[in-house]
Image (tube, rainbow over all chains, first blue to last red):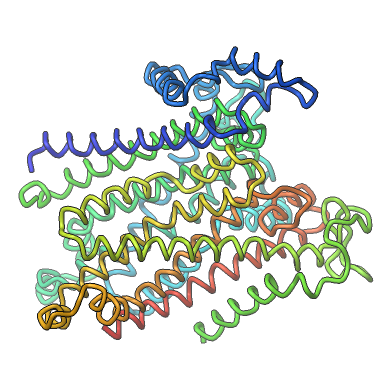
Length: 317
Length: 262
């Protein structure tokens, strides 16, 4: 498969996925009976007032027309206006997204090297003591919901030891970097969950390579330890490793909602949770489509990087 | 040792969740004392953020998490077997198409699906059930279709076809018995994911709302009082943790033995 064809296919798949997501989001939030009118009008409005409001908002038009309108403005970068507060959703996004990206980048900077090291240590010698310890620990880790990990960390580090703040409030007009200590607990929670999942995936890839004849040959030549792991196993397991990290990053998108909510951290996930609680439909629609789009872009980039670092994928499609 | 502990953990938490509502004496929603009271006479675990008896809430708050997770697992496994077996037996290009479509759904982060459906149907446990089913089914489908394809290509299926067995007979006598182990193991893994998601739904305030007790939401409700008494957060959080971890260990053990047997 040539690069052009490969990129074209992957892009088409990503665009198709995003289209499916947008239809799903629209169907779940706009077509169903409990629409924005119920939120905007109080309990004591008459049926006629509701009908007027419905017509004002254009909600009496057929669903497919409204979807096309909405999708069209999405494509032009217009994400609508929040019902609560009346801010454009794109403003909200510009305000909050950097904070979320900060947590994600910091987490990934820790997860990537740690998971590669743990995955290699475990995968190089399957069933050895180190592998059993790492595999059991990560098996427990992947089962734990983010909010459980986060609340246990809060209990120990913030409440009992008192070394870190319990919530991650950012002063008005400031950035999280003004008070870096508020980032520690959210990043730790994200890392704990992501590390377990990434390590398991990378361990599987490394264990498969570790049994290959060329690794055996290298061992017989006297290559051992880190050199064997880094020079012989890792280059051949890097494709799956990149894919694993991408999958974990995409899953982090869901995790941020939980972690930001628990720490009241002003990111896009916290906004989304608030919007769902307030039934602020335009915000829910805009933020979910953007978050799903980010997850898709991460996976797309991973496909490209995995192909770049693994020359075999180019020659033998 | 781990195996025994894991099984004991599963049974213990399931017993608390399922039988708890029968054992409870007081009301889980009635205010009985000051908020965040430490354990004392009458309230062995103390009270929560609104001064409700914590023990009563713990005993009644697990059922919704476990039933929703079990329901979603059953639905996802049934759908997964239906689509997966069809894909596994279908010609390769049809199967590829089915797998592509399910992969498309699998890419979307599960929490997002849950949030969107909850925004459409506020306060509905059914929306949580639908979201969890929708996001776990693709994984079941992929596992089942791979297992079916492996069995369908084996010698005994060719023999059965060769001697003139109908597709229904082949399915019943050759395919299904041989993928049963894989399906069961997969259901265990899906159940962990489902517990994970239903508990998270409770934590995020989706599904049936307050004052109904729910282990996930209890963690969220009681976080502000963590420095006064940690029990209202720790007890539900640890119950969810023990359930998810021990089910995962049991499923992993099952998977290792299924893999060893074939």
